[in-house]
Length: 290
Image 1 (cartoon, rainbow, N blue to C red):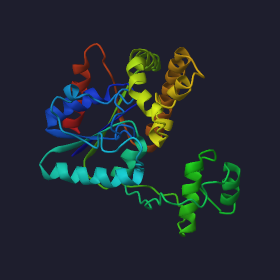
Image 2: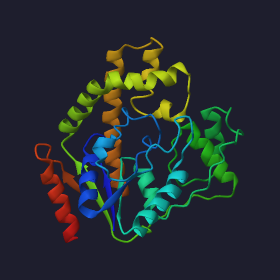
Image 3: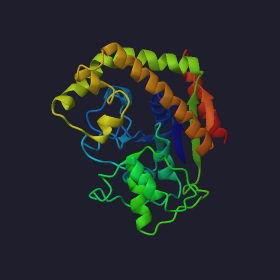
């Protein structure tokens, strides 16, 4: 059996994962693309050692913030951890909001290992990259404004790779997809209050990287991190930064819902924030009666 806990940011995935790990003798595999980085704890809402309650966690803090880590890397690492946990007679529990990571780990996705040294297209504009791609007959959707993905796609096409629509299949048996949800108003309130509470420790977390001028993918793409750069440069006020973080997190939560609903067969459970044990009980009953 493999348990997968998904849902939007801030909904309570970490708390549920700990409770299920205790009940089912499980170990947790991180499925959040930002929590793989050391030192990014506040903005990613990474579980503290106390919150982990001595439950073994995998793929947390495995990379320095300036290192690159791709979905290709995650697929390999997560599958290794799944087999490692199962070999001990324990239950793997994947937890996180990065749906692409989860699907790459559990479904028959094939990736070409990325060549991070390639500079062939690095200096081209987005317009030029799209022009080059227009020469190929592609039946897939392309994010025409994402330069990194455009370059990656061109490099793959040059190898002879041909995109195809595929009904991806699970490579494991007995996978239980559990999604946590709540009303949009409640979720947005949680997100807003969380950023109001975390902003000062978040500044303390990010400022050393700014002072060292560490310009990494993680710091320039992670919500709560990228928004602070203009503040350190005296281009935005703290109030503006908080509001932007809140807005970006709410929009990210919307995208997460859309992705999970379109890509996976999720069993959704409304979170009881007054008595979280009721949520745990409902999920356990679902698993045991499946």
